[in-house]
Amino acid sequence: MTDTTLMRRLTRRPADKLILIATIAFAILWMIPMLWVLVMSFKPNEVLMRSTAGFLPYPFTLENFINVIRIATVPRWLMNSAIVATTMTVLVLVISSMAGYAFARLRFPFKPAIFVMVIAGLMVPEQVIFIPLHTMFADWNMHNSYTALVIPRIATPIGVFLMTQFFRAVPSELEEAARLDHASHFTIFTKIMLPLSLPALTTLGLFTFLHAWNDYLWPLVSATNKDMYTVTVGLASIQGNFAQSEGIGTLMASAVFASAPIVLLFIIFQRYIVAGVAMSAGK
Amino acid sequence: MTTIDTGQVAASQAVAVPKTPHRRRKSDIVPALIFLGPFMALYAVFLIFPLFKGIYISFHDWELAGGYREWIGFFNYEDLWYDREFWRATGNTFRFVIMAVPAMTALSLVLALALRGQDRIRTILRPVFFSSSVFSVTVVTLVWGMVLSPDRGLVTPVFEAFGLEPINILGSLTWAMPALVIATLWWGIGLPMALFIAALGQIPSELYEAAELDYASRWRKFTAITIPGIRRTMLLVLVLQIVLQFQIFGQAQLMTNGGPAHTTETIVMYIYNTGFRDWQIGYATTIALALFVIMLFFSMLQLWIGGRGDTND
Image 1 (cartoon, helix red, strand yellow):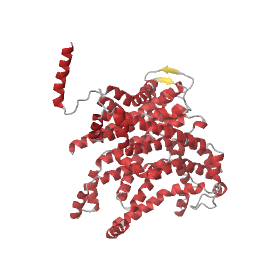
Image 2 (tube, helix red, strand yellow):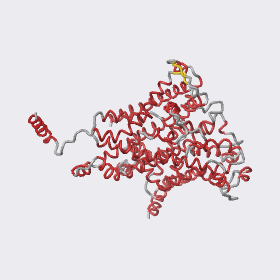
Image 3 (cartoon, one colour):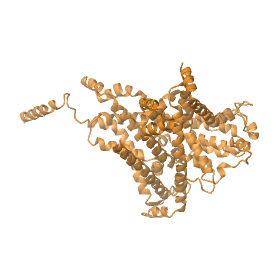
């Protein structure tokens, strides 16, 4: 077993053992804030008014979660986030993989120049262009719509960059064989490239979804109607009022509620996320 | 006519065939338009155009609502130069970056060193440090706002245990900014840590084995093998972090709202307030462009240092 070899190594090297113990302690410290919030979400508000101490959900109640679903607009915000993040992920995957295929496998004039122009876009952060974008959508009268929340954030240079890198690494023999059978570019793309790039697509999809779900600045300025808030903006809007009032437990429950889908996604796809980081770092 | 044409075709084939064994492909302009078109159209409309529109807006006295706009040339830029509030926000942002970036880089490297390897304990511990990155800024600030709260927080018992009077950390001129740094570290450590773990995994183990034979000390191995081996990643992490942390907004807005006494008001917060509280988007885009110039400077610095490093290899 790995554990016995590990133990042997630990006993051989006392310093390693110390480091590991320190790291475990640090990891526990790291999780305490999360656990505390989770525990508070299961405690009655009246108890929390008196004391927020303790790491046991006792007395236990589900009242906070029921409050969140019943009173607050949290379910509506969750739905908005789900719609925005899902649409954005699908569109980013389609558009970036198509563009990546063009850059990696097609011949056309000015390709290097166009590619450099796209990559240069990595240097333009959202914070620099969100005001002009805001005026554009205001002119089109399109704020407070799903389109406004999704469309301006689909053309991400990083997606194109990742997919181009990935498609370039696909051996050209596969493509040549298909070409001899007179396969069209569309067939090569859908039947050869896309199935091969499933790991890359998964990683890009996960990061896009995470980013879209947690995005703050653009939804904050674009969605001014309470019904069009995403979870992130919605929670921010109730934080100030709740924290000082009697609704601490409910506030914590809404945070847990808002994070649950993303935590679940993280638990399922954890290894793809870490692998994706390694991939995007480049070798 | 026809004879010349076939002759030309035959001649061009005769030239082309020996060059490449396969049939020579011509330019794929039509498929390229189809595959690249959607991206480029969106890219042009939602990235390139807004960038230039931002520059255009910055030459105006332009109000968010009401449609008032007047060309004023470089007046916004002149204003910016003499704007005490802008320089204060820039100073605050630099202060945040100077605290957050080295702390983030060092802590993520230490964690990566402790958590590399494939044994079970480490594979369980790694996601712990990565997991906080999946929360939105709203949840992170909610959690840390609670933890640091003077009357209900987790830090109060810690203060009391040391016999100290609990202080209102987020309301303190000295401690508000470091508190934002700590929340940011907790939130963002996962990505640089994973980058370092990936980089450490690519250092050939023979190097360590050879050092082991020479009875090299832990520190010696770290400085002679590990650090040179991850130099590029270190640079990448530093620049990514600098560019990322310069954009700090959510933590400052939600945890301290720029206070106390404007000590945590950052550049993006100032942009947001100027544009969406005071409705002066002409001036707000000018500040945004100034931020862009600062960030470009650091990106270029990376390209320059990175390029110089390569020639030395």
